[in-house]
Image 1 (cartoon, rainbow, N blue to C red):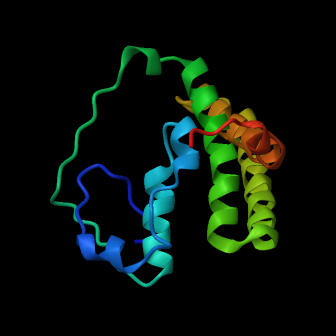
Image 2 (cartoon, rainbow, N blue to C red; image 1 turned 135 degrees about the vertical axis):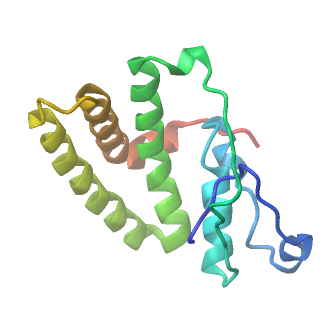
Length: 151
């Protein structure tokens, strides 16, 4: 795997001691997500293996405030903005921006698809997710600079 979420992850502490380039990015604290994705992506980039097991069962309580379309829209927008930042951190400015806008094209096509997919049982949810992810990716390079990060 190239990255993991921190739902039951363990690794050797000496990885953190050996490499000063692998650490949790405090700039992402404001988002409330993404720190783990970038952290484990960096581990993978620097040659450490990430394994996944289908035998480990992880549960997560879905909070009531997350059960509405407005939460999906806001989260999807943040994921788009966050994705821009992660692409640049992993690949540098030029390649990161290029990847960001290639992914924007993907979300644009996905948005068009879900717009015309009238009989899909999750049409509105999928449409909102892809549209607001697209919006966040386009907005990312401009919006990310305006966020006052926790130091």
